[in-house]
Amino acid sequence: MHNDVEKTLLSEAQIQARIEELAGEMNALYSDDDAPMLVCILKGAFLFLADLVRHLEFRHEVNFMVVSSYGSSTKSSGIVRILLDLESNIKGRHVMIVEDIVDTGHTLDYILRNLSTRHPASLRVATLLNKPSRREVQVPVDFVGFEIPDEFVMGYGLDYAEFYRNLRYIGVLKPEVYQR
Ligand code: 5GP
Image (cartoon, rainbow, N blue to C red):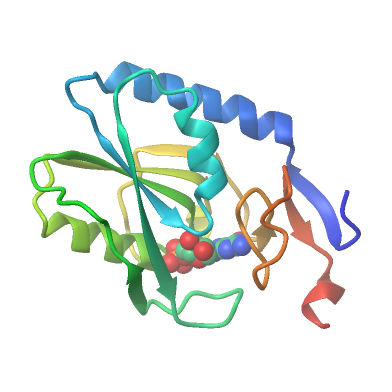
């Protein structure tokens, strides 16, 4: 385990097994004819997307959006900006948003409203992590990897101050790291 990590919340094996299960549910839902577009929300969901798509058996596209929430590094403010938008039109397409974590729900709420105005055929959400106890806005989530308690987590795509995204597991930082 990395020196800065207090504890592992989800091991590499747990994450990989759950992603395979989620992919199984998606394989039952979508067909080649649906050819959904998976919209990966960067940066946090990049590893989740990469591992997920390797288990998908239906034809699909991947696309990326970069969004940022104003606020401190550990707290979202509810003000969301699109820094990089989709490169293609989603009108009439089946779309699935791939997120790292839904916390207050503000980021996802903004993305859902924004993409809805573009008239996709369907709009679903897959998130690796969910912190239901922190919700401030109700948002529909179709696929959830893990429900986690109210702790700031990092690893497996999620950062603290842009570091630790490369960890294969999801962990909680030692409090002294925040105070540095
Ligand atoms: P929300 O808008 O739902 O409050 O927050 C969503 C975004 O905040 C996530 O996409 C993620 O970037 C960030 N976030 C929320 N909770 C955590 C956490 O525990 N760890 C990390 N690294 N990022 C988080």
